[in-house]
Image (cartoon, rainbow, N blue to C red; front, side, top):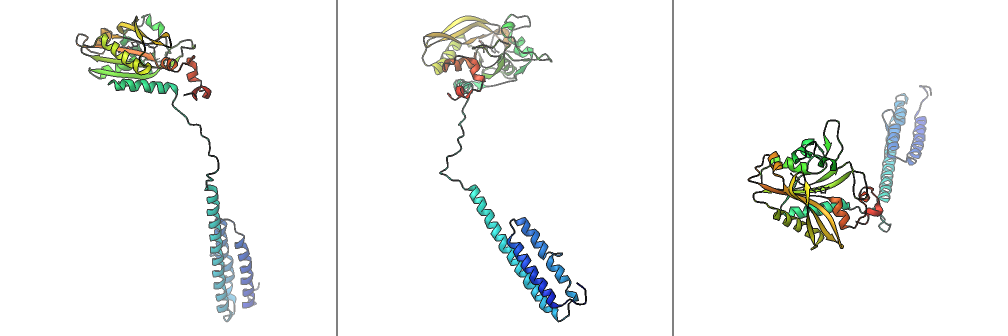
Amino acid sequence: MTTSTLDGQQLQAQLQELQATALKAIAEIETLDTLEQQRIHYLGKKGELSKILGTMGKLPAGDRPTIGTLANTLKETLQTALEQQRHKLQAAQIQAQLEAETLDVTMPGYFRPQGHIHPLNSTMDRILDIFVGLGYTVDDGPEMETDYYNFEALNTPADHPARDMQDTFYLPDGNLLRTHTSSVQIRHMELNDPPIRIVAPGRCYRRDNEDATHAAVFHQIEILAIDQGLTFTDLKGTVKAFLAELFGDVPIRFRASYFPFTEPSAEVDVQWKGRWLEVLGCGMVDPQVLKNVGYDPDLYTGFAAGFGVERFAMVLHQIDDIRRFYTSDLRFLNQF
Ligand code: 2U9
């Protein structure tokens, strides 16, 4: 295209050809991004129309107004076509979104199996509710304990034979995994003055050979009451009230027993389905334990009890093997 011979006709033809090409291309645009690119390609500063208009300077002066008008008409035509295509694409996009989002309520829903509370947690919660109802406050503490809080403070010095029944997992730094939640009560008494009414639930550890009734990791709940004038009768009354809440009006019996941290001590059995089942241990807090936390044993007395949550869940739900609680077998768990 030599400079001297350019005339209105030629440019008009170029504009018409551009219109045809551009309208065809615009009609085939499928995305809003492409639409924007095409708008710039045809109507942008360096677009096809600008290129043609850029040659207008070489036109004979007489042809310029016509070409100018044609160019503006073409610009509007292309802009209109681009707008229509944008609306068409946006409408299609919304429609596609609607279809994607439309919920066909006749379609069967996604079956999400309803989870539920693990039998150990439901048993634990039930027991805690009973003691909170009796005026006890729930307290907890660290599972990794010091030898002092797990044993020494509870009248169980290093060479005490009771340690064998409570063998546990010892850590390189001399700490251990607690064998009972009694450590929680010691910590509580160090930080609070009597009267004390606390219930301490939590995970405990024992290096036991696992069998149907023993697990290396299990859950315990202990209660502690410290006040002036508390006697074994208060302990018996509290234990009776608790067991009646869980088992109903069943016969219970106290059998003399021994724990380093209580004196006198007893094991308690309930008569359940015609058999005597041992369910907890208890006793009057040993005066030495009170001294260990700075309480005056001549002023204050206390009682305590401890029991395994698994034990209660197994008795209440006739579960034959403690290991069922930890195997996450839905055939077992879905029964609760
Ligand atoms: C303090 C003083 C005394 C808590 C007690 C028991 C008896 C007991 C066992 C039951 C089953 C442990 O889970 S188990 O194996 N516990 O029989 N526990 S009296 O006595 C305390 C606790 C804290 C300061």
